[in-house]
Length: 339
Image 1 (cartoon, rainbow, N blue to C red):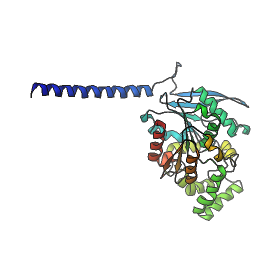
Image 2 (image 1 turned 90 degrees about the vertical axis):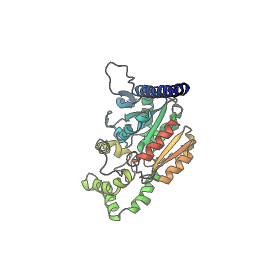
Image 3 (image 1 turned 45 degrees about the vertical axis):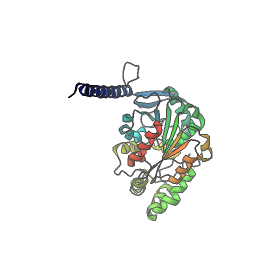
Image 4 (image 1 turned 120 degrees about the vertical axis):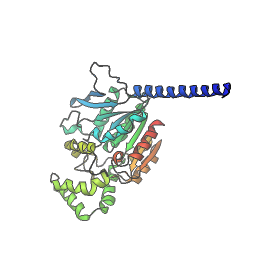
């Protein structure tokens, strides 16, 4: 080999080796930074922080857990229910850390790891909004990094929060929730129930009318005819979903939602913010499942009404699209967060 060709080959090898080492080091540095434990206390808690919030009924403790560290993308997760838990979101751990996206689990007041007062005066949307704002402040989230993702009831709470406090936000994600509970109830009654066996529907409604929902047959009918088609199509349910259902606070759920996902009859029954969606100016993503308990066409309309809205469609998804259509759900969510 001629000397200059040998030197040229050697230089090329050196450049590739250097770039490769830089990439490895950058990956290591990024990984180290992402998993940096910012807890300054002597005892490390794995990202868990118990926060104190004020209410008209005194102070209570709220459970949160941070996974990852990203100065510009911090996603606070609002679970469904009301009275559900962060466990519905545990599939996020398989997708967001590898993208460097920080997210924060949060059990709302009355939910699994947080305090569980029993005074029904606490279970109002307005009080929950103020709770979220106190949690935001305690976690040092602001408009430079704060994304709020609400799923199901959490979507209602997220919309209400944005209408009052959007100046504190960087972005909003509404996952599998309509902006109108009367429209949600109508879709269930006139579309989904019409596709079911009439005798099954009549039996479910009779259990609710006679307040005999504790009868095991009631939930059996719901699980086998409604939940496994429109709530979560991975059946039997994934272990975290079963755990979340087992930890549901029935008092909070029944007061605000009603006895089940089959419709809505609690304090939220008349809730409707559709006329106000254009007041939300922050970038907003709507995630819909085509087999959802929620009307997918209504959710498409919502994405068009937001001042800066966009839409992700989970073609195979139900109400828990983060479980039964993970490919579309997380691809769309990650793309939105990284824009």
